[in-house]
Length: 120
Image (cartoon, rainbow, N blue to C red; front, side, top):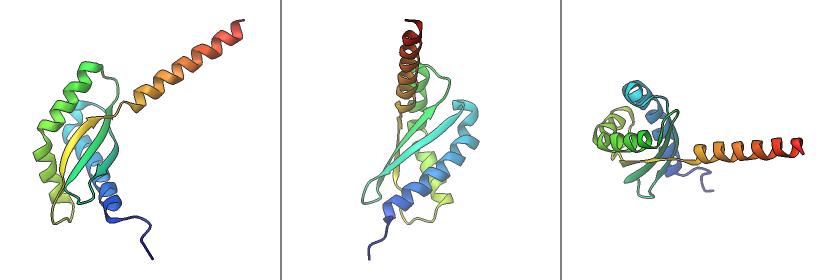
């Protein structure tokens, strides 16, 4: 019988948990309130795409956060290696996840439509 969750899913989940703690403690003062939304890991466990959001920041702040985290990726990878029991720690690459911003924009549009309907 096949396992319900494969190794890559378990490693992905563990990386997400460890990154959440690491980023809040080590980079929280520099980045603000950062949330790790998703970690996609390759099948061979060699690379990880990390999607994150930072609240209360503008477009320039988002780009600066992505650049800062990708510049710090070797340090973050080494810290993950210390915290996790893996033979090979995947290389990490950070991407800003704009799904939260899109959701807020849709909610605002729906609120505007709802108020327009009540005014008529």
